Image (tube, rainbow, N blue to C red):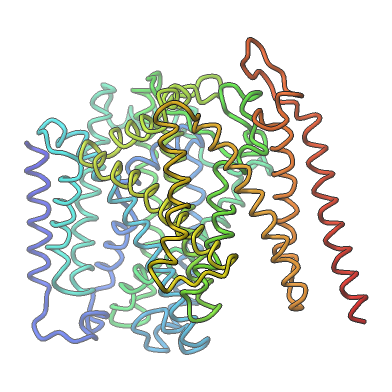
Length: 589
């Protein structure tokens, strides 16, 4: 209850600031630049809080466990970056009297560059804000809302409503003052947490400082190891560039600096902020060392593998019977390249006015699909235990079925309401994919057989047999006459083989159109190796003849035979294609 009351008082104070600083009859100059009347010291103080979030309270102290207090080197590099901003970028912004820093792109590089920069800012800011907001909601849910029986979606909606209430009025002037208030609250919370840690240690402040300084994690500078990523000069340069990019070229941060009365005051603001960042992060790292002194022997940490050359391997609990190549590119990677895309692309092309729209449609779809895949992969890695470097926990969850694993992930991350929404999505996606696949099959047959689809009668001539095949397979599987998993594996191979064929056809088309055919020939060669290797290894194809089995169960794939065959086949297909292009060029000559 005390925490809820504190949150309520905090948001009430923010709304009071919003009301007091909102100007009546404000114009764009007031909204975006506060008529350039903001005190520089308030802007500097507020920017410290704007750079700190709930993630900072978790991440910076946590960094101490892995890299000691060497992050202070990066913070020193921030100072160099902020001086560059103050004396290189700010004079340009003030000289051009910019309302937004991206209007500089408009003046020098044109409207497209201006819009591209603005869009990148919007996407990155929304993504970053969403992550920070998510962390805050998780913490609030774990410590308060779960005990009150309030579901996670309700917490998110409530917090979103409160944020909207205090941000709907006022402009940049309101942000300057609310940021200063937030900075005050954050430092107050940080000092209280540090005081609580010192109390639990049973030490006085001087004794706590000596204990932190004596701990091995208090190391700040790495001067002797040039290979280490924590090397002093590497971190200094990294910090400088991070500050320039994430502050000097960031609309959100630089907009507040443009509200200062003059260029000189804006420069004082940025330089002061740069120096203030060092002691602020030093407090966070001291908190990390203090927490380690208390909880250093605690267990239950989630192990997340760093992606390095050594860790780039198969983490399956039985890697010999679950190889990555070519299985990964026949199952998961079909989301990026498959026969489904090969058949859908011509259909989508009929719905677009020009070829240029294809970039937005297909690239956008692939980016969205990739983000969704990364979210599920991250959930699988973070929520399940890893034993001896193997994903044992995830394997156990998948043993109960993919639907059960999806339900488990949704329940752990979003609660029961989130499960309902996620399961609806899981049901709708296959239905819409099936509808699209049947529609594609019908239109492909219509083109092939030259059957016009304007009349309902002609549509039924193709819909009935196409849907009939699907119904036959579905009913057969339900009655136990057909093993759908086997059909699915055949589908996976034919799907990628169709992609291979279409890629080779597209390569020849691009060659004849005198365009860069390598853009499709390279993936076509790769998919040729995938398709051939899978055909040799898969149990439903030739795998029964060459793989190792024990008691009827697959023990290991014979990759020593299959991989060379796949490589030779891919080279042969590429050679055949190049021969065809050479022959075509000779005949034209």
